[in-house]
Length: 557
RNA sequence: GCGCCGGUAGCUCAGUGGACAGAGCGGCUGCCUUCUAAGCAGCGGGUCGGAGGUUCGAGUCCUCCCCGGCGCGCCA
Image (cartoon, rainbow, N blue to C red):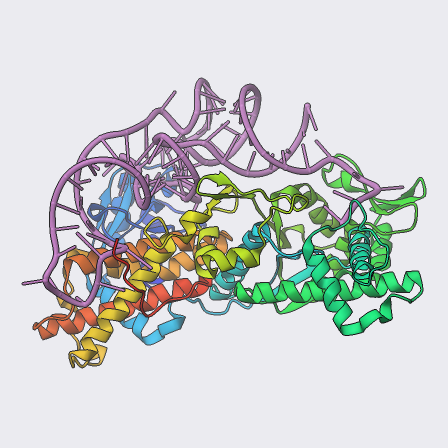
């Protein structure tokens, strides 16, 4: 990669200049950034500014010394000192031609880094199987999925996991609700508990169970009947959730059941370990976790006085289970309403002897839905909430995923269904996809005209000298850096923005430069440029889980 | 009260301590006999919530304050 090459060059310069600068053994980190303006060259570094204080000389002077010691490189045309002491590097255009050839050689793997040997588990969605997924889960799903993909591209070994609570009070209420609906369908007296689940989907679940088992479950002993209906209902609900996620392009390597932590004794073991480490104690018949040792404002219950473990106890057991599987990092994707639990989970990690920094919680803010500016209520009780399935039906997976990744996780997200649905430039997803489709169309056109694309090493790429051609090449060259940045910051929204930028560069090029002409040399070079741009767009969209259509219908306004 | 997240153009939001702060939408003006006008170009639009501080350099880091969202159960 060009960045590595330049960084090494600067490091060598630093070495050669170290005596003159009176530099000790410590070397500063060399930061290299793409210059935003042409006058500042292609890349620049602030290393002289960082160094100035340390060696007690003016930054510009340090920069001069560095430039003087910079070794020759065939890709570097010249280096300049600018502003307060930046070193700007001006490259020969050839470097972009090298990038173009690299894209062609690597295809779908362009932008992906070498394996790092590090592993991460991304746990996301993790909705309880008590009802259908909605827009909030969709944001969770898409953030987790994109972080997983992007980290994979950055060289991590990644496992995606869904954790579901199939034990506890909410599930009991759910079971009671399914039972009530089942009995109702049989014409027997029954009522869904007030604080139970009243949605019509519960009736559908009960109907499904009725079709499979007939009346057989109705006459079981009450306790067994309740348990069976809970189990059957939850299994069906989870099946429906999986089907929705499949439509949404979200796949998991594992589904993890909370119940197994109870049944295996892992929760009891977790509490034992915490007690042994001095972070769990008995109080008023319950067992408490010493959360105050980790900055929490009060200690938290692990085992209630009635003997039932809390969700937090299960979280601790699950944490142990995750670490025992050998991951270097554990990422949790949580809605902002759970931010209060962050301190506790990290505290538990430390209490159990793990590195709390290995536990990363990615929080995202809420989504508010509107339709043409009007708020769409999301109340389960009022029955006005839209399910993720309905949203996919209405706006499609591509538009929904892209839209949900447009903002940083920390920003609340306003989604207007009319806008997401609109196939226009209100909608960045179509803008990007259109870029891909347009390029595909050009390539089809060329082939229909009988233009044979020659091998890239036989094509003179130096004819790509138009401003928009150079800009497009520069945009393509940024892909690897953008991917590693998005992965490092756990910020997939960076890639939707990059995708838009890349598409914009293409659209400008398209407007300025005709690709297929009588000028064979230019046609060949531009076709390769198109092929590379198309590959870059495809690679970004793939990371975002958005499709790249070969063609899009033109709609005249 | 304590904690977390926001406050940047009319609206929705980007911006990992760097050079004159950006995009989309909305408004106005141009560009289709040519590979898709779902496109492109141009114009207008800013006390980066406020006040201090750190730094060669602050939208970005620190402190305090103001406004908004969320969380602080032996609920899940």
